[in-house]
Image (cartoon, rainbow, N blue to C red; front, side, top):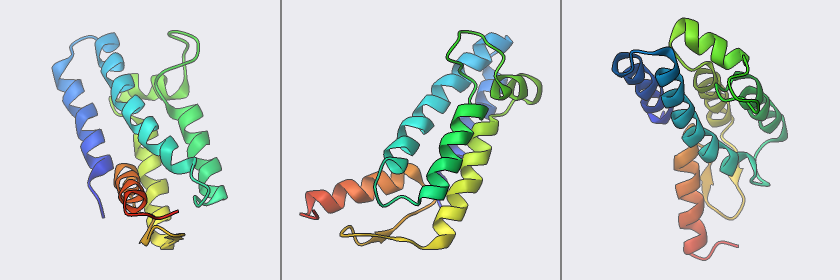
Length: 134
């Protein structure tokens, strides 16, 4: 199993210690989550990604992220992050990616199974295409 989500959760834990104000902490969490969301959406946008997990993951992002479409609107993720000082989005995505890896789904033409690391999946896919996979 990869350490991708552990590293991202570690960044949130570090932000808890580094930033004294709640707003500074939440801004840092938003940045970390934005990186995770970028990696994850590159996976879920792939036609080989399982539909049920795509829906689950995009729902997690929509509900559990700290950032809101409306500035400072009280999202579920913001509320939990403020009280508990962790990212519920990262935690739930971690569980969803464990499910993805357990399924051992092979990616057509790329010669790898989906991993529990969004960035690892992106890197493997990019390498496969550089090597000539369609």
